[in-house]
Structures are given as C-alpha cells and as structure tokens.
Image (cartoon, rainbow, N blue to C red; front, side):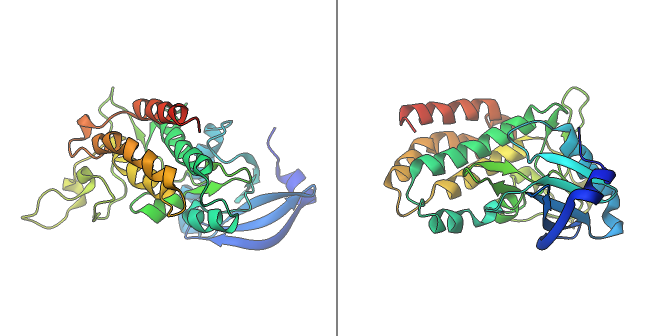
Length: 269
C-alpha cells in the first residue's frame, strides 16, 4: 500500500532541495533511511496540475518505464530517488562515469526512450502524448537516469489522451510553437493571419514519432563511439520515415520499437 500522512510525518526526514519549477519544489529526503524524492506544491495556482500529475503517476503504476510512486500526504508526494538526476545532463553524466564511449549503454538508453514512448502510446489509460517536449532539452528534462544507467520517465504532468475512436485529439498548450523540433502539425498553418489558439488544428500521438529521432540521435552521438555512428547510419532510413511531413506516413511506436530491437540483436548489443 502507499505511504500515508501518518507514516510520512513520523518517518520522513527532509535533507536538501534538489530541484525547483513552476509547479513543484523537489527535495532529497530519507524514509526509514532510504533516499527518496519529495515533491511539494510550489504555487497554489497550479494545485490542479499538481494533483492531476499525481493521479496520472498512480494510474501508470507499476511499470519499469515510469518513476515509482511511494505515497503522499496532502501536497507532499514521495517518489523514487535517482541520484544521477535529469537526462538533460546525459552527456555530462556519461563522461563523468567514463562510459561516454560505451555503445551498449548509449544504445540501451536510446532503446529505453523508444520503449517509454511505446508504453505511453499503449498505456493502461489509452494513447498518451508527451506534451512537455517543445525542444530537445525540455524533452530530456522529463526523464531521469537510474543508478543502473536506464532512462525513466519522471514528469507525467502533461500527458493528454488521444482517442481515435471518438475523434478526440489534442493540442500541447495554447501558445504558438516554433522551430523544427516540434512536429509540422504543431506549427501555425495560416501564414496570412495572426495566431489564434481557437483556430489551431489539433493533432495526435504522431508528434512524438516526429521528435523521436532527434532524441535518440542525441543520446547515440559521441566522438568516442565509432560503432554509435555506424548504428546511427543504420537507423537513418527508419528515422527518415519518422520525419515524414504527413503524420499518417510516420511509423507507429510499435514498429519503431521492433526495428530498434532488430538492430540491437544485429549488433549483439
């Protein structure tokens, strides 16, 4: 069962702040001498976002792809702690551990990313889309790197549901998006008049497929890993399909995952 207020008040020792954002402050804490992450609501204006994120986190348990939920008390949430922290620092972390050259570790991290996207697109709640992903480092910041150098989804606050049967599609926020990291269908399509959110067309999970190559290519890029470059060239035709302008021409996450496993077996990684 989850830890409740009674248990947490008696056994949780807060140590130091390790992160902060608009919605929550994050602290390293100890519960019965085990390190855990403690998230506390930072701004009451975001209370519903905070609680929605907790509901989503609980609904996705248990899975190796998402951070473990241990319990909560009011606006205090306790989850698994991963000392290597955010995946936006992935290159620095691998260099610090002297494994930047290791193709097996890099490929497993890339495979983890594909596996997580596949899990979200086939989740117990339905097709979930990663909306907090408007650029490469924002995307990577949603993940942490485990002690065993595996990628785990840590932030589940912005995972809207797509329902193809009932024609229910999504938009990632109400602001205009720019750049080539986001999918083409996320850009304002009417150049002749100013952006208006109510006129912005909706889209589906294929936005995750468009972004996928940029993320895995970044994970696999290293000047010290010659086999990484060979694998990247092997992945290129698949990645080109992922970057099809027409979202309907992009492969599914299931197909991509199979291809990634095929390459893993081919190179005996």
